[in-house]
Image 1 (cartoon, rainbow, N blue to C red):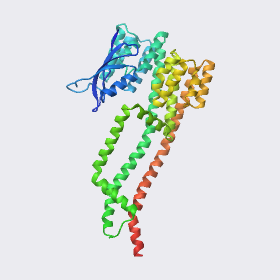
Image 2: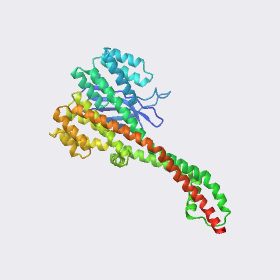
Image 3: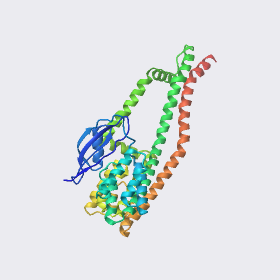
Image 4: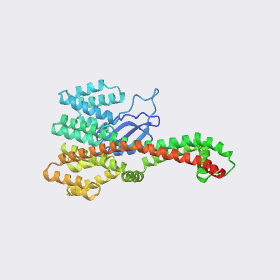
Length: 415
């Protein structure tokens, strides 16, 4: 059995450990390498997502003077894809292209990876085989497309298409992060304003209330009690919140059922859910169009498309579609049966299949939904500022009313 060594760079983070691992891919080829994760279980899960069955995972001793450079990000791979595609299209030989790219790298880990790929190509390996030594950076989709391009003799064209795909995918991810940031910003502002009022403002009013010698209204007393608790136990509140978030993230990473339930909930949220649906459909359509156009058989293409949607709900739906297509169903029929894709998407897929232009129709679907994501995020951005002002107004106004109720009550009594 052949042995392939994969050196997977470690991610630089105070909370991460570096591990060495050994395993086998779906064909039984042995692989080994090193990467980083919060713990061994998370690393095993990540490797399995990349199609690797880990057999040994060990903690690697830390270097004396710390980690050698930052990790390789998805954005780095996107930039690399564009650079290598451009150089190959310009007629620069493969080995020389990697030498040039490696020499210009400031990130030591990225440079080491490019040098390793160059050395393997110079030693007789194909590009897809050399990339297989780095499965975390080059996933199954990337390697399959590269292999298809090599087989058809159009590697430069395929890599140019992959580069465009990576750029669009990263742009779409950025839009989704932006959309999720807005609600988080509203919550953060609400918590910050409430904390400032309860810790610094309410105690000043409480001092005044003590001189009244009368019972406070229930609403005012509730605010005063909350202020006393937060002032005395703010550290405990922070500890509980931080512990709850950490505990949730710990469970989320280890429980597929929890991940699925959270994903279902997110997809049902107003506005945000719509954006996530649009994003998943766009990524599904673009990824499938890309793989199908590159000559990858439809069933094989569907095996790698699900993970690109960014949603466990859509991933499971794509797996069901793949199973149906593998036994003879048309793609549009299988998509309709999962009851997740809009009617327009199913119809355009059917038209593409009938006309023999499935990749073209899927690209049109992807472009439409990518634009829908852009429009939805822009609309959310325009609404969020006045919404934040309303939230702050309600919080501040509510507390001001609560603080002045005793004064109004006293004035009414005196009057």
